[in-house]
Image 1: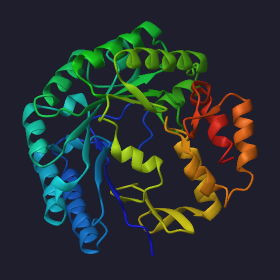
Image 2 (image 1 turned 120 degrees about the horizontal axis):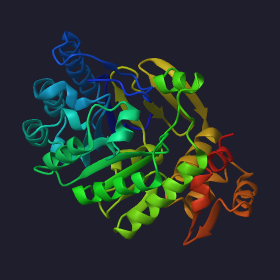
Image 3 (image 1 turned 90 degrees about the vertical axis):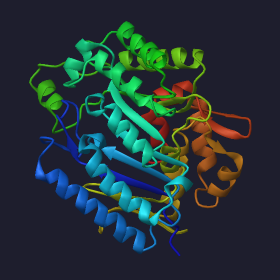
Length: 366
């Protein structure tokens, strides 16, 4: 028997404007483009079909990501969420998140999605420095970001803010100021992402032509250490390599991903993870994009749990030995390299382990 889906992800592939670093499945369209109406109708149909097949019966978290879900507007979002509510008691969900960009938030939309059962909002701010926002190709400014967070706070308590570090031309002082402004605005959860240059993006072409400097690894490491110092001093805890939260505001949907929970993906490019005790597959619709046997499943679970401060508890470690008999040698090597430590009944990543993620995660999944 296949393990039931516990998480649902719905991908919205539209934005007002593509950012220069973005490699996600999304396109920039006008707010009245017929493609938006067609998408909302198609998603409502996919939600209904999934529900009738019993795929939503055990779902505990829902995440609308993109792209920019709030770019759809209230009418189209209502069409999708109403279809979901017909088959799933939204009030029984542990968490229901919607992503938003500052330019697409207003008080009416905030009130409407809150009334439809959304209880968490994640706002893609990236920076509170207008110069950095221009480099990234964002269409909002710092004042607009603060207005959006204030707008979200009229209904939502659980507000997350995304910030980016290591942007060419971004100073450490600028990044630290963004951390303080996110806290002052009322964020309960903050995700910090180092900029990566992905093939096919405008940034990739600019770097190739010498028009943009590549991100500096040392500067990114300094920024990640700064984030830890500032956010922990404010009372947040780092529960994952890039995620900080006040107690009780950890992202349950993402934790599902990191702990090997099966998830259903709907929408263009969305991936579903299906598994049983012996096999794990990731699919885009009916196309298998990854197929793991039992040993690789366990190795992946170890790697993903090492993203989290909780790490790998001794019970999971002992069970993993049945499929990975060389696990003690792997852990001993990571301890020697200062990437992992064993304390309080678990193998946990060190600060160095988080900064040297490729070395740490590659030990489990070369």
